[in-house]
Length: 369
Ligand SMILES: [Zn+2]
Image (cartoon, rainbow, N blue to C red):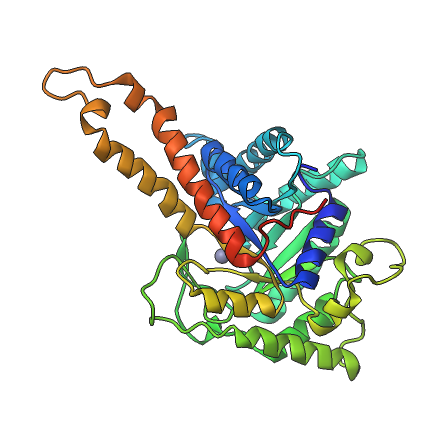
């Protein structure tokens, strides 16, 4: 298996929810970092998710072109080709944080493209898309989510939503560090009432629990992963007492017409939401483990893999200073300034950080057969 089909992706997410582990979702901005992510997942024998942000998609298209749809489709086309050489792992492709101002020029055109692909009997370019409604009021966030969920079903993709706001700055997207960093159990019930629990389309939910993007020294913001458990418990209770009309289902059962046997039902009953963890760079291993225990199935990793890549480039440049530069009339050394020489080091260093993420999240060694 190479790039996930819709059904395979649903199975991956179910397996993680049932098995109590999560997939790293690695942000990439180039074919080098994309290859590094694949290398890392293969080394870890882990399935995984590779994603582009709004800025990453823009950059992929070429800095003088700056077309997010072209950049996203180019990324996906390249990924579909190279991922075919990693037969033992499955990778899903995702678009990260799409705020309201980018919907019409990014995720909506991609969804329309994918609906056409599916109508022609093909698999979609991407397997999931994130709608980031954290900057609009919850009701409006969910109105847009409802519309996008309908489109996602037709496109054979899974939707990711954000409830609350992730603080810090990423890719020109920034949010205050305030009470919106903590979503609430009542928000969870509202989401389940509005979007269902799988029967109307598959979605993952990033409920915020003090997350911030980027690297922060410890102590600036307090992560409260137990909040995710409170949200799951409250929604499970709301299903039991009828405040939420539909029972949660395993993803792989939800997408089939009429449902059928609910294989992952046990795990879905206790943890109605498949959760996403943003802004996890710099988090303590115990905080990550606690979040995963409450049903996180996808954790975004960007800052730490960016650093791993660039750190190796810096090491190369300092170590081979006289080879990469033409100093005092000398001619440098081609074998050190050939972009592949530092590129290979950078990709291997980033791949090693991806392996570490798979180990921490428990997905290492668990690639689906
Ligand atoms: Zn994020």
